[in-house]
Image (tube, rainbow, N blue to C red; front, top):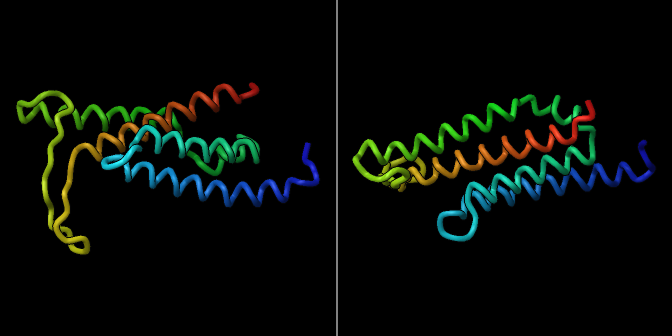
Amino acid sequence: MKGPNDVILRTAAKAVVLIILAFSIHLFISGHHNPGGGFIGGLAFVAAIVLLFLVDDIEKVRNNIAVDFKVVTAIGILIAVSTGIVGMVDEKPFLDQVFGVANLPIFGETGLATAVLFDVGVALTVIGASLTIIISIGDDR
């Protein structure tokens, strides 16, 4: 049942969701030098989507975000495991970080590491698994 304060709630939720999404990106990026990373960045992203679920109907949000979160989980696991195997190709332990330097056009000399790819895999796994669980619990079928 919709109440008279829905306009305020929906308007505030849009602003809060943008803030949470920006903060989740910050948490993800700062994870190499400060607390944060793929896990907590993924959880913050899930918090923003859950807020949308609370404000709007789950089906409406799922129609606007037409992604199968089980596939997102599988892709995340594949990326995370693949980065671990990259170290083994170099005859190093599983999940050993490989680091390199690339000269990018705009950014200049930039360090690249497989740890970032691992964090992407962790974030996708957390997002996919968490939203799959939340949608399964929230389904009224």
